[in-house]
Image (cartoon, rainbow, N blue to C red):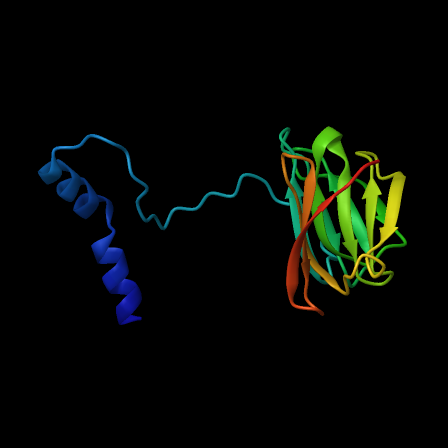
Length: 161
């Protein structure tokens, strides 16, 4: 607790402003704050084990719930618009063109859905040398970064739909 209080004292807004003023700079720097304001809240009371969330540029979200075996698609206000069952999603990412990439723990596949939750593609990750996909990220250059927890590796993969 003393370490946390020391960090707060060190990085409080007045200390940061004072040190910047003494250096003669006017740039803005992030400061510690206890005031975190939620932008929205998902309106579902029965999440079992939510493991991942991907936020679109319009504020909508896709939430992976591994224990309930579903993906929830929400609008920008956090209201669930529709859900996709039949998957055991551990990780989720939004890619180019609005496609949703899901690391499916049950089938050890990467599943691709469109923005409405319809299946677009699927590929077997074990044939590509992956085990349990613990994380997935869609990069701007059109690649996926995939974290393989079972084989302790991270790999970049190109995908073509």
